[in-house]
Image (tube, rainbow, N blue to C red; front, top):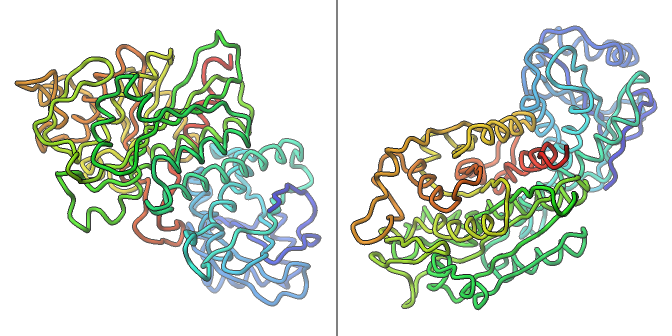
Length: 499
């Protein structure tokens, strides 16, 4: 699939579909007005008859056009012009991509919208459209004989003669890399647990490292024992699949520059262990490695973009299963940093994996850390299925991550980290328990993780809601979403070692 920017006139574009975004209750832009004139006022009549309103993510198709080299036009609503944002533009463009990607070998041209005086720049729009067309045309068809969706054969992003062609081409190339990295994370989540387990995930990491020039390291169970990662190993001991810790390193700056650590929870399947989940709660648990998948996707893009920053991605990979060796309620585990943990729920396993991996990241010199995990249902209760919870021990670092999310069009919300939540984790027999009470469960999980980062500036992203979509929507494919990949890339792009 090729993705290019062009400033050729609309009438010169040769594609199967031309996608045009129009604002609600706004006059046509000069380029669209000229096209409307070529079409004898067809677009104007659609609007006047209210067959197309421009409301966000609504669509209308014009078919069988003989006046253009492109026989089909898809109009997609951008909502009110003043309210245009990266989030709204993404919703519109993802809807468009999903609407027209049902056939093989489709070529699509997309007209750059007029961003006006909004916070969205032309370059941002070009980047986002390229990413949306790349992501929106890929379905969760890994195991279907007949796919429901097909990647576009060619994508043209069309501007006007006054558009900076070089800058927009660079933005389009960046957007394509972002989209492909998101699709990698989605694919890893969408593959079932018979395909993606700790060893196979680690093998994919090594393969990707070779492809994109990253350094890789994989620790097996013997090496994990040598590293004294007793908390992570306990989770894995009930499975026939041995654990792995996969590490990717991108050194884009001097060795003396600070290092950003990205840590992903990689529970490739979560049965709940002896605290076993009901069937409904287990159906989507192939997605419990969404944090590790996001780290893998982000590291791939960071390498491909050759960002001038040092980043290490850590992916803690285990299965949480049930057999005679399963760790048990009442067990006391010793984590890598020497803290002891009383296990009161084996379904609170992700924090036990992250505890040891976070400690390793600290010991290897991380200047700042972000971890991502499908960690708690409590976060979904608090924030819903489309918002990521943010927890941190450092106000400035938290703000930097939130700003990166905003500029990437991803919705996050900071949660409190008041000291009293840590009181719930006090144990009579160990340094701490792995669960608190039923109240504030997402926060107590974050307070648990805080024990394993020392004073290192750290942000925990609970992606339990947005990492996996239960059903298709017009603007979103069901299954893995690749959430927070764009945010991680933007954090790396803005990281201090670039300065």
